[in-house]
Length: 165
Length: 116
Ligand SMILES: [Zn+2]
Image (cartoon, rainbow over all chains, first blue to last red):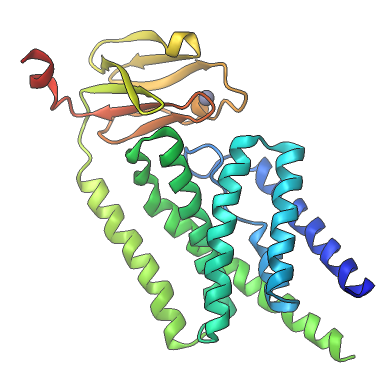
């Protein structure tokens, strides 16, 4: 691994952590503790498109561990892990298919992030009524995904320009 | 953005909308709340009588007032359950994840079960 690559991955981990921190300050969107908007997904989408798949997985894992160590709990680690694994898997599959734009990839990533979290919440409390939150989570995941995808698009274009120079 | 993208995103939103309508139409004013800890029913309290109830050997304090239930006190570190507001319609749930406790509004259709 080249030093420049390590440096940029470090920067993205830092970015993902800042976004996690910001997200931590926002009151929960719906009344399920631990369910988040998925802002750190911005950094993951950047890495996925700007650098590569393996790197996106690495940044996601490092962020997850650091964040739950710094301001989380075992519970938030479980939530985050379920959301991250599902979201990464689907995003990588969709990206590899080459049939969808990064906005769509980001949207499905956001939505899967929320589905993973609610699934864990249902499992932990053994209460299926938590599915009531699913529509809200699907819509918020889509909106967040579109915004994140558009933002990532701007940054990815800039990154490509810089690479050429 | 291609046609495919719009179809997929539109599909997700459509599923959300249908699910939302389906769940909302099923909601009715509730009759009681069911307390569950780790999925096991611990008790039921009527929404028609005001009162404060200590749940799960005192980890959470539930308040019922004017037909609505809310979490008044909790010993969990995050206190998210106390921020979840008031519930009164069937299916609405307050979750205290650290204590694995849920409070769900029910229509009281199981009344016959208890009596019979
Ligand atoms: Zn609580």
